[in-house]
Length: 101
View 1 (tube, rainbow, N blue to C red):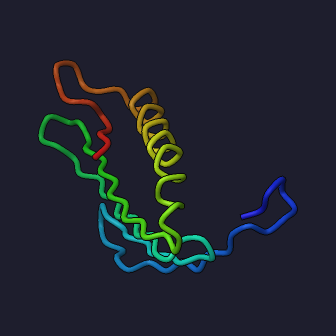
View 2: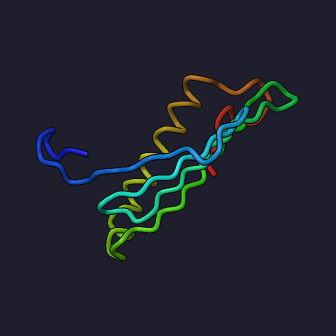
């Protein structure tokens, strides 16, 4: 990650722990974050809608980073799921097309 596109402030090592139909889990470590585990699943429902679930485990190296990162990550995932709901609208009378967990 580069600050202003130039200054390195984070370096991440990423690996996939799970790759299966409708689900994948990536884990990474970085200079600032000790562990980042992101579990995503997409499940088709009987009513034609889709349930998207994001589960994130973050264990920063410094406790203060958890406090600093939480608002931004909450906003980012909320924004992502709002965009998905707009792009993939719910079926009439059914649950939302995307759901944040």
